[in-house]
Amino acid sequence: MKKRFVSLIAVMAIVLTVLTVLTGCQSVSEVQKSTEDAGEVNIYTTRHYDTDEELYSKFTKETGIKVNIVSDKALVSIEKIKEQGENVQADVFITSDAGNLANAKSEDILQPISSQTLNNNIPEKYRDVDDYWFGLTKRARVLLYSKDRVTNDELKTLTYSSLVNDERWKDKVLVRSSSNIYNQSLVASFIKTMGEEKTVEWVAKLKTQMAKNPEGNDRDQAVAIKDGIGDIAIANSYYYGQIANETDKTSEYYGVSDMVNIYFPNQGENESGVHVNISGVGVIKNASNKENAIKLIEFLSEAEQQEIFSATNYEFPVNKDAKTSDLLQSWLDNQGITELKEQDINLSVLGDNNAKAYEIMTAANWDSPKK
Image (cartoon, helix red, strand yellow):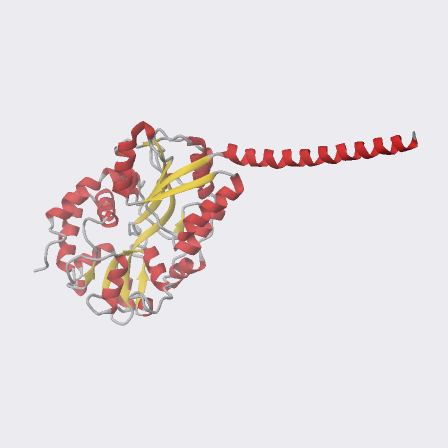
């Protein structure tokens, strides 16, 4: 009898052990199912930065939502989305420049979204007026200049206007082609801030100031300054950050920042402010994972992520609660800027004025051989 009692206890112990193991296995399974239930979000992006992918991984870790990425040029991505129609394979479109975002909206591939989080994190001027797209980071269209050949006194009077009107800069200005969306958006902003007639005049005068035919990217303009081809160049601020942090000694950009500096024009009391543009994002029409798409965009708009963009991609945050990186802040400090003065426009106008801007640039023979 005693032996049977002991055996019964042993059997019960085994049963309890098995139940415990099964319960444990069930918990693991539930965790896995929870992760699977979180789903995914698919991105078409024109950006190609390691930081972006690191932030997507961080998002997955925090939410369980898997992020799938396809990179391509803006126009290619837009055409792909149009072709896919109701069977579109992506949920989110990310690209640089409000002009590209406006184009995506006009091609009817985005949908408006309502998010109080985004409204709180992203100022109205960096959002589409109808909430089809939202800015994530911003960059200024600045002037790069030769440290050796441009004096402090010359910088004091340097504006977008003096760049084309001052004889000092004749045959000294470097800029990329009119096909570049950054230049198109700069001109589009002038149509808003100073009117079409004065913009036509500005573009025509810029042509006479060019040091050579427009070619290359923004960083190539800095190299041309180093090589003595010109003294000043129009470029996006984050490209100067890339140059300043170039560590590959075999790169043509290595050491260029030792000879070239950055300047934010139009900061005076009566000036219009520097032209600022964005990288931004929208939810694709017919997206299969709309809720996850909005969650991702909200995540990227948070101050913590904004500061990572600023520190590693050399872009200014759009979220006012995010701190500008030390490097970017040093650029402002060196110029005595306590708060960057920007053009007082909603960036939606860059898309509205894009066609007219390109028409003006073409009429002025922006890209034709210099006489």
